[in-house]
Image (cartoon, rainbow, N blue to C red):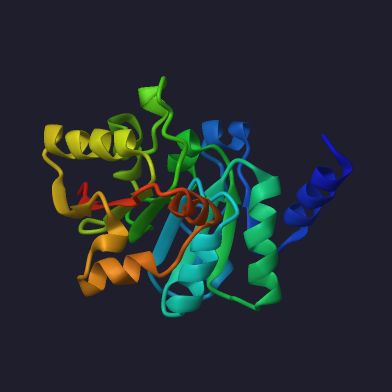
Length: 222
């Protein structure tokens, strides 16, 4: 690992709004902040929103700025990526943005039942050869159900037409409630779609510049 990455890992580990859940803690279900995110980190009772596979956490930070009445947690396994958003949140003095470094498959060990109000999945790896690793696979959606409140939305933004179609098929197959969807977000005129399009991740800008359509789905799993 390069010197720069090591430095970023050390900084992330020192940040008061960043947490690391090891495989051992997840397996033993002994993560100390589980069920206490509002109490120990945010010091309020506001709704908690997750960005899963947050990467550089542009969405986490963007949402935290836009909605100060909610709390946001970016989750990713890569500390080097999280460092970007976590550092920005610290510099911008955002008190409603936190970060968790762990694998998404261990996510159930990080949050208690009904602790999370909403989930965003923004430009995840579409995992073309590993269906169970897709962040909208039924394998992982069943995990999210264990901590997502009833009526809590799941949002997906992706440039992948295949992941978009796969997610729609998963929603239909398991009788989840599809709220709205589009395979060309920037062509839509409704106010809700315009709001969804306001915050753009690094990858979203790259894909849009190359002419890719941005797909969006909003659905319920509880």
